[in-house]
Length: 249
Image 1 (cartoon, helix red, strand yellow):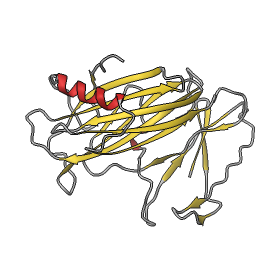
Image 2 (cartoon, rainbow, N blue to C red):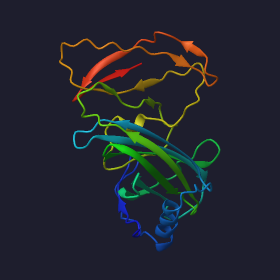
Image 3 (cartoon, rainbow, N blue to C red):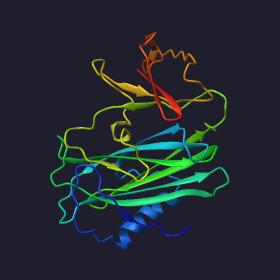
């Protein structure tokens, strides 16, 4: 595999500035992390992947990542994000990397750097392996390997996308977006544990041959981490978005 190339994108909470120099060391570390199927644990890193429809291919995947690391005092702080998508035959379907400037003094309550990243990538039908790596200020690198099955959402049969959960980022947390990200994507969270007082919005896309007059019935229930049902007949709202109808609860 070739060396991962870098582009620069200004994400949320950032301002235009001189493009920072990307060192060979940074490229090498991310390339090593993406080549290795064994995750690196130097950075606390969580990744969620959600299969969705696409106007170009059979489907797409929404990639959401959250990373946290000890703060480092650098003259030019930045976060490097790279991910690679590999199909069942071992072919690389996507290989992207970007350097994001880190806003000054964006630390959490424990004095650590915490960032969120989101992007979308169009993929053909099938099972795909996604490897994502982040290098945080100070040079520590973390990586995650996960898998996602992408159906053919263009099939005439009724199909439901994966579920995505919206949750606000922490106060002042930078949210970096890739080139394929849509406006609503930065609100998607990797969290899966919530207090009972939390208010969440869960989204899904329904695809298929549907006339505007067709009735679409959607039901939802909530279960806790022990598998017990804690809510039935949860209210669901439906809106038409492009080729899909999007129920949310």
